Image (cartoon, rainbow, N blue to C red):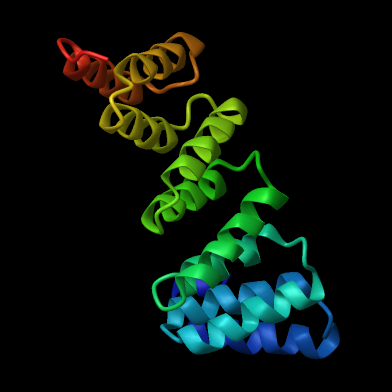
Amino acid sequence: MYGQRGEYDKAETSLRKALEIEPNSAPVQFNLGLLMVEKGNAGQAEKDFRAALDLDPRLAPAAYNLGLLIIEERPEEGLMYCRTAYELSPGDPKYGYSFAFFQAQTGDREGAVMTLENTLKFNPGHLDSLLLLGAFYTQDGKVESAREIYQHALSSGDLSDQDALLLRSKLQELEGKKQ
């Protein structure tokens, strides 16, 4: 509550008191990590996310945030944590999209495509995943595959009007492109 109002010092005090009462609380440790990110203290945030994962290795949001926090400085380790979040919660599209994005960034385009395809099985209307997968297909000369995923998403009814409009424009861009 304090953090949402920008009262970071009060939020930190409350979370530290909560840790005194319940030192083995992964959610409190995780929230402390999020607060440290907000405060710009990446080093402490990393320690807090790691502590949360030590307490609860199945806490996907902690793995995800730790992965995002460290990926630039330590890509392999960051990717490992993004993978962990995705594997713990494959139905969460932000985990699948982020993992796929960083897979591609680190040279595993084939793995990224597989991750996006799986993410879209759970969330056929996840726009970011659709656009990234469509871009990969198009770049790889698989224009018909890009068309198919866009058309499938449009027919699913899972898209907002704005997202549907964007996918229709992507389909128009594909007109005239050959397989």
